[in-house]
Amino acid sequence: MEMSVNARDQDPHGSLGLGLSLSLSIATAAAPLELPPPPPAPAQRGISVAPISSHPAPPQPQWWNGAGHFFSPASGMDRSLEREHHYQQQQAAFHGHEMPFLRGIDVNRAPAGGESRTRGSCSEDEEPAASSPNSTLSSLSGKRPAATRSGDLEGDHTLRAGGSDDEDSGAGGGSRKKLRLSKDQAAVLEESFKEHNTLNPKQKAALAKQLNLKPRQVEVWFQNRRARTKLKQTEVDCEFLKRCCDTLTEENRRLQREVAELRALKLVAPHQYARMPPPTTLTMCPSCERLATADDAAARRPAPAGPWGPVPVRPVFVDGPARRS
DNA sequence: AGGCATAGGCCTATTACCTCA
DNA sequence: CATGAGGTAATAGGCCTATGC
Image (tube, rainbow, N blue to C red; front, side, top):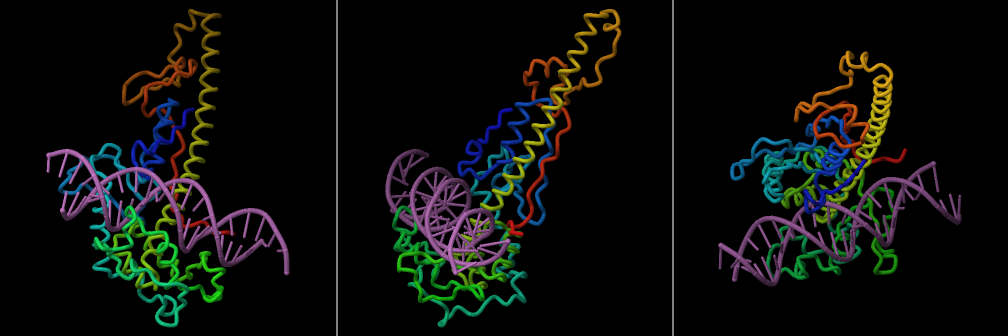
């Protein structure tokens, strides 16, 4: 079975269609096979890409790719439009930065004055919309300079209660410090991620303000969270494909046995063979209306693509981050 | 209109630190 | 107490799109 993960063909960022490409590969390479229906968008993710007015995309299947994006296989909607649409929907969801899940949560102590500041703060995070052409932060090929990158995260970091709250033990100047988010912060971020797994700048700033974090920290958390989700989905997909492979292997064996039996019968009693009804395993492909014969399986040649037979339903990872037991 | 530079976002891979068994 | 594994915050670099000139 050919398994080509060619997500880059679909999405230059490699973020799209892992499940899609895997499913397509298995479908085309190992018929008879029924493609599982595209998994419905998990409601808790709260993101859907409906055609927007400027790009009236025809109704097409949009598959959740497990990494936080919906992929419209043949739609002309580019990523930026999708992202912009995400923003619009998320803005609506936020009700002007009203985030209900933030209410009633005691988010750490105030970072002001007495909070641990190990290094200088980052100007980017003090001005979340640092789009000024004069911004020194963006002077290096559109990236944050490494110097400020390394320092910008530690200014307002809120340490978990009971953590190593030794801001003065800088571990030798240049070494970065691993600071964990509090449970409350993580919970709020998780709730936010369930609603929308990407943030626009305003949402990021609002969330960061509510959590006493740097916007960059929120951004990093979301990036890592998306990566974890995708990794989990990949693992789920691998298991799914293994089951598909097992199913197809067994089906292939069964068909080959059947072919052998039929051939033997044809040799022994051709007149009886001629009166036999078609094998029960014959299947009409609904898409191409071609009859799948046992020879297809016997010759190991890929039958025309189309939904042929039962396969396990592809699962979609919906859980949160893995927790050590 | 097309090219170029810049800014900013996201992704992936990796590092480094922290926690826990 | 030491240690290794796992989790994850953070970094680095690349690619893409949007925007302005």
